[in-house]
Image 1 (cartoon, rainbow, N blue to C red):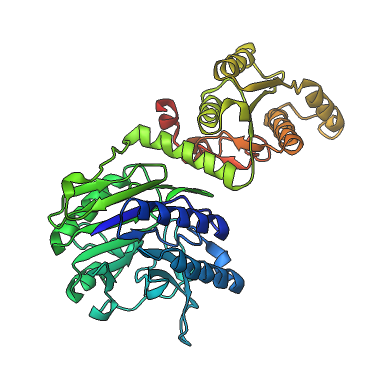
Image 2: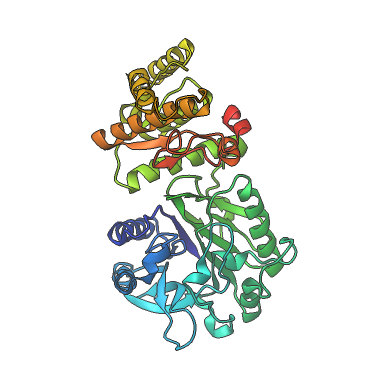
Length: 439
């Protein structure tokens, strides 16, 4: 079987754009001579669609996309992820589904069995678990018996998962039903170090069940989640025979019968992967939310310097504004360092002193605070004035304000509410201070 792994970057809720991405991937797969093309989990809606799934019209619209894709995919077989209604009178109203498209129509529909409800996942809120796999549930794909699973269905291997959350192993069920090839449509968020375990898990299951494993993952950022792609294929002996690019869209053409002809892209490790993930997450957040530029405060410190450098890498220097806002508590080098950073990166730089506003603020509270010593209150005033200045830049220029606090500071509350916590995206809020220095 010659199969295409369509590692696309969908936008949650943007059905027309997602449909166009899928149409283009289908056309490219046909041109490359693929017999089948497989898309990620919920590729029509984007993942995670969250409460959009509660809108009946959205569900109807997403099903209509599937029907149109079926017509578009004539000449090639396709597997697409979408949301399907549960017609049974009991249970959640939807399934997390994958449709097999053949000859201009939906040939079969298959439903996710294991629904994660932990960490960043909340699928039991929306979806009904699919039934146990039986022989009749196998997919006929290019004349091959395929066991089709969706994301979490893979993650219950009793040999590698220390504490299993589910009693059922859908992959074992598909093997018992007679699958010759396993295909998994996934939307697996990036976590540092996760891909290495993914490879171990997929390779182990391919070897255990003696069947090639085709794994197609979403790529891109959707709100707070980042997806790294890294779609892979293992042969029946558990050997990696193909791997897509990391942190970018890719169409990986794989010949299951000629492993030596397939492409294996290198995947960034450790610090490099974190760096690429942050850039991708920022770029997609800005683009998918309709912004074109960003603004941030430059203090002369390491956190704002890192955020500014990431912003330039993600968006280009012409789309980044840095603002220094000195006050009586600022050292001279904090302003000079901020200016040097802006010059080195080539970003637009503004200096907006907040001393006069700070004086005015204190004067207006002088009588109220009479007899009380100056303390953290006066220092926090400057942080909140800076927040006000930066939000004014954001409002006036239509730029997204980036917050610069790191995970260590946020965790212990070393930040000022309504001050340096102002912003639309806290890009390094999941990056500990030690990793900030490393980056």
